[in-house]
Every structure is written in structure tokens, then in C-alpha cells.
Image (cartoon, rainbow over all chains, first blue to last red; front, top):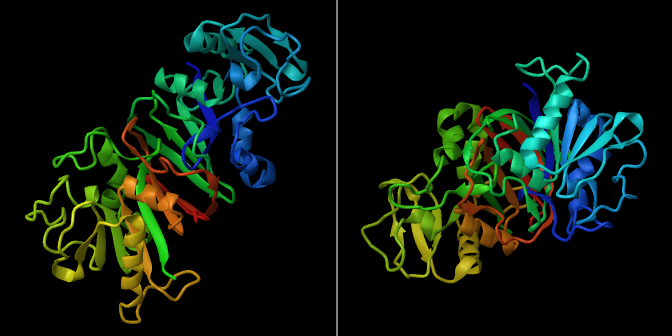
Length: 211
Length: 211
């Protein structure tokens, strides 16, 4: 059984992005650059947390994380990350619009899934269980790791479907006041706080018990 | 100048209470007892944080924290805490309905303020600056400490008014899915993360820069 993780940076008031996302401002309006300062300005201090984000066998993301466009595809758009995206693994993109697989340099292949979170999960699970016997070590499992890469809407769909094993919130010292909330529409439940750690520009908290 | 602190326990999705608050369930519906387990079940582990909550010279709270009633006062109601409430200091209760001061055993006096957060703040500030030369030590100040004791609606009014110097969120491992949110209606801004500490049943995070 695959083990599903999710890393997401949030403001102290629970937003993963501000309102008004555009090509120029993919995280929207407000002090959104504060959300990710910890990753860029204090990378050494947070080396373990940064490494864990990409130490997985496949990713799932929402279309809005892959592209600023909506509706039919602009096939010239190949993601925000250049020719060699930092994923180096299969990436399944949730969308309502079909598109052929998009292999990139460095091992990243974007595949476009029109069947919703369940289909994306099944395709990612198949990918991590057939990737040649060297999946990442996973708690309680010999199978691969799948990361739900964002954004908030996609994370919330997976949380509501009970498909995330481990949620790692990276709480940044900023409030946004509006935008896309993590947990929006997700029913309440008891969680298990697995770990928490403070760094200069962030507080990391890991929860299980979300299924 | 008085120094204003605020301690509030919140769920991982940002709620300080569930929906449907009643006399029997003052924190409303859902797994709300999870919010405060850290204070009761792991008090020794959190001794410093618990001590800081009450180490102040005056408190301000909303009516809904003092009483389950609404509208005109039932004068027989003297708070949730018995004859000797745990405050031992002046407590200013925000309300739309006038009521005479209510002195209790042990040094607590409830005073009822009908002029909103600004009047409550002024009265608390006057109280802590005239309490006889032994105010608590405060960062950058020789004056007293005022605690905004809750609930979320009152905390949010003080946050929006820029009257809180130090917000201490106690983030409990639970989601509520609905209820009263901390930061609701409070404009976004950059904060300073002063400290953060993980314990078994809670993650403590202290912010400044809220004014």
C-alpha cells in the first residue's frame, strides 16, 4: 500500500495562497512571499524538511499548481519549472481537459488525469508500485511514497477523501486574511501530532490520523 | 504602556470553538475537548505556558466566555468558575448590557463594559497602571500586563484594532471543520515568530508584530 504525504506551507490564519492568483502572482495577493521564505532563506536550517518534500516516488498536483491557464490547454505551457522540473518522478496533474503525457528532462513526466482524485491516486499508486523495486522507505509499508503537492484545493479534496496518511504543515509567520484555505470543506476529526519543530521562519507540524 | 498578551487554543484548522455553543457544551459541537487536553492531561509538560496565561494584571473577555446567556443579565449567573475564579485580578467583560461590578473571592472582580474593545482596553490599562507598583515584568515596559482571555470573537476584535502585542497560539491536534475562527475578519500582515515549542498534545507558537 502506498504511503501518501502532503507538505504545504500555510499562513498563521490557515491560507496556502492569497486571492487573485495570476501568471505574475501565482500565489495571489498579499504577503504571500512570506509563506516560503523558510525554504529559500533558511534552507540549511530546514534541510530535513526540504529533503522530505521531494523524497517520494510520485506526485499529484492540481492544474492550478501546474499552470496559470484555465479551460483548454495552451500546449506551449510546460509548467512553471523550466525544462528540468525539480520532481524527477511521475507527476499526475488533475484537470478537466485531456492532454498527452509530457515527458521532461531529469525524469519528470507530467500526466494529465481527468477522472478526479480517485483516478489520480490509483494511477500514482500503480506508478510507485511498479517502479523497479527501489521505492523509498515508508512507515509501515514496503511500497512507494506519493506526495500530494498542492495547491490547497487539491489537498482538501484528498483530505476529504481520506487519502492522506501524513500532513506536514509548514506554518509561516504571516496572516493573509483571505485566499485558499487548507482544510476548507474537510470534516473535523481527531489527529495525531507526530512531531513539531520550530525554526527561524516557520513552525513545522506533522499530523497523522487523517484517513 | 501596558503590554497585551493573548493565549488561545485552536484546532489545526484554526477554530477556537465549534458551532452550537450551549450551557452544556460551552465550546460547542465536535471534538472540542481535544483543544484543551494539553492543559489538563499534560500540565507539567506545559508548566511554563500554563503559568504565563494567568501571570498578568488584568483580563478582558467576551460575554460569551463569561456566560452562556444572551440579552438581559440573569444576575444569579456569576461565571463558570465558582466563588473563587482562577483569575485573581480585575476581569473586564465585554457586553451590550450594563451590570454592576461583581467582586468574587480570591481577588477576581468582574466589571462589565458596554463601550466596546477600546473602552475595555482603557479600563484595563488604568487598572494595571494603578495596582500598586508591582506589575508583572513586561518586555520593553514598566507597566502591567493585560490578557485578552477570549473567546475568538473578542480576540479578533482586539487583533483587528491592533491592540495585541503578543499572540500565543496553542495548536491542538484536531480539526473541527466549523465554528469560531481566530483571525476571522482580521486583515493580513507579516508577523514575527518569537518562539515555538512542541509538546505531546500541542504546538505552542508565539507571534508579535500584530499591532
